[in-house]
Image 1 (cartoon, rainbow, N blue to C red):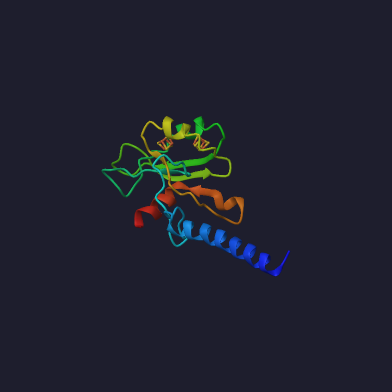
Image 2 (image 1 turned 90 degrees about the vertical axis):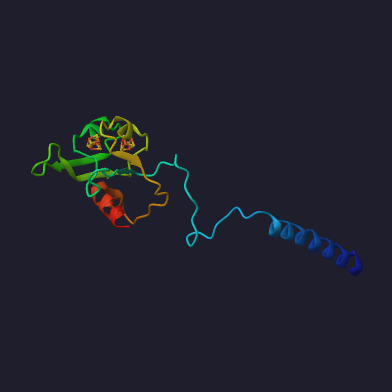
Amino acid sequence: MTKVTEIIKGAASLIIGMGVTIKAFFSPVVTVQYPRQTIDITPRFRGHTKLLGDEEMPERTKCVACGICAKNCPSRSIKKVEGEKKEGEKKKTATTYILDFTTCSQCGICVESCPFDALAFSADYNPAGYSREDFLYDLVKEYEKRKKV
Ligand code: SF4
Ligand code: SF4
């Protein structure tokens, strides 16, 4: 191959490469600068379960610690549900709700079986941790944290 042919081939390859780059440059952006930018998660996304607040008393959740969700969970992922009845109240208020997210299959049986509609799926799509224990969530504490934000 002569030098001239090599130069022509190199230039053609460069033009083809630049064509791909220029086409991508003017195409709509489909990615975001994660983690500085995030996208809205579809409402049907299933993150870990979360407790919902009581509309009338937003300082507490709707969970009355009946334990029905824990009994129905096929993965035995709801490890502990405790509550206390405050003076003057008819129902208990959950004080502890431990979810083992390492075994939860996000099947939704707990959400569907709660007679008080106290559970929903969170939009938390990027949980991270250093050990299994980091994925033992106390959903009462998680609600308290969420309430402050
Ligand atoms: S989340 Fe619902 S089913 Fe589970 S303990 Fe609370 S009130 Fe009962
Ligand atoms: S989503 Fe399914 S596996 Fe997870 S805690 Fe609820 S019932 Fe158990």
